[in-house]
Length: 428
Image (tube, rainbow, N blue to C red; front, side):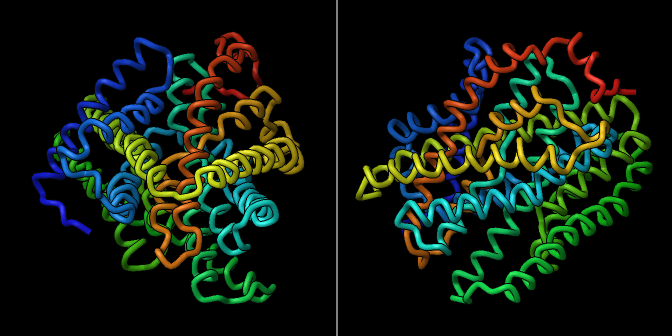
């Protein structure tokens, strides 16, 4: 594979940033989420500029590293930093049910569905089920902000995505180790993997929370310097991720999540308004850049993959099956699992909210990063990457573009409706 010079990467990154800015401007003029414009832009970029900037041959594994180790910590930490921690705690039960047992159910359902109806063997189908089950709220949250959606609905969507990103990654790694080792599935094997899952998942969160708790108290010695405070927050995000993922073999995503939540809580008490505003603006910008590159990568590699896969009709058929599988799986989780586990008034999720949670379960960055990280020895690797990109595009172009209309039809974006909802408590 051809090596890329630093200058080539810089030129490509600068052009992509400009493309992202234009896409954001277009999304404001035409009411379509900018993530969808970015996918279009990625495809156009691949046609017009890729050969000029020498990005055409950029390997998929490199894209995985960019997403997983550079962009994802930014997305997770920013979301945790900006989320309403009080509302998150108040709605922790439905969020964790969606993010942990919900994602596990989705993994197994999609895996068995694809194994039964497609050429994928059980191990590979389970791998796909694990990587495709993580939701990505970027397009939906942007619609929520534009329409003024109720805060509880926003925290349910955002909170689920925060936690199930880590769940999906840990599940994927567990299934991948089974597939590579050729270990037969048994109750003993599943039990060991379940224990390992809990250790990696909650251990990562604990490490991130401890790292952030120790370092965040340096804020008080910053003399309200916005630049130093912002720099320290970047250090917390990446340091917690690296310590957990690289040195302790725990979940780096959960570490970034734990670090962000702790930094958010203590930042409110240790920082003044001017510094908090500067911190929020920086992380909003960083999140914009990270999200932009993720969805531009979707467009770039979507076109490249179409040129690579031999049997396009079979790929389209498997994409259609995967879309059906994730929709049915999501239906089971939202309308079956949630009502069974959240029966008291505090945790109960209203029917209109369920409709948005069901249809707003888009797929994005984590699914793409995991698909691109598949070892070359895995059977049907290119097909899995192609199916993943197909599903992501479907959720963006179909579900992402129709969510606004559904919200308007349900009238849950109206302020007076939000006030009447007993599940939405006013923010203090």
